[in-house]
Length: 339
Image 1 (cartoon, rainbow, N blue to C red):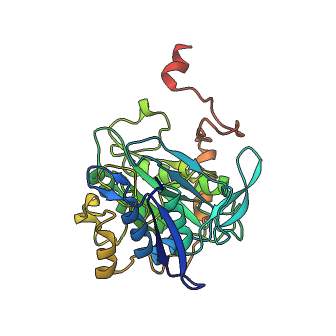
Image 2: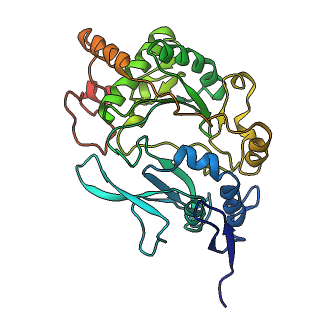
Image 3: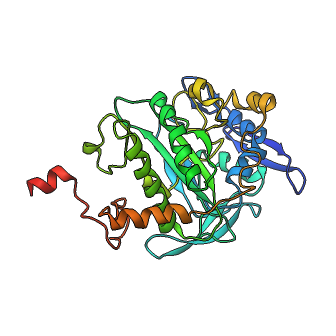
């Protein structure tokens, strides 16, 4: 028996594209009954703000062939047979290896990604014109056990103040889970390691102001019930779910841009694949003008150098990274003491 297949008409900058969608009735979110077709239609509905936030940059696709309850894997390179409107750009990974990485530039490419069973979209912080220099400083406020979204929301305005003192404007979105992301548009004048150091400097300053609520400790055993500023999300080829990307959670939540005025009362669980199109119709895209006035990270890098002079050195890198200059030993403190 031939597999079920439909064709969707997807508007785009080059006219309509007819894109095939196999198994459109496959349920991706079992608890809600959201199907592959619904996800494709969601991507069409949100394509303008989605591409404004995630297009024209390297992107990794997190694919779930059997829905959110099944196994997943990442696609970074264009697969064989990808249509010609799915673009690519050559990037350099942390190993020094260079390889083409996927780029989404029009609604049809986002729907094609859904056809490839993509649920979560992970964009780089740099654009295709210069993949080595980010155009965003990203701050990931990650709740630890014993904390939740409310605790992240309580410290986010203080981080906004820290970044404002450094000359940066913060835009905010829900992570789609329990955390909060602050994105600051920046001029692409520094490479990823510098931007990581800027994020560490901001995190350390926030930690000094809220030591009982915030931590930059890389090792989980040292974090306690505090909000972790995950500075390693600013590394090359380390990404977080993009704006308007669904999350692979049972509730089909979406990483959603919000205004600062919304933050005190916002319920991140209300932002789902089914609710976001209506929200966009009602209030528009809070990130519509994101990037219009990029800042510079010079002040944060001055803070980084100040902290180095005061004895605060490099922080650990993720385990898949090569050993980096000045990095402390990659061993958790309790094991190091035992050894």
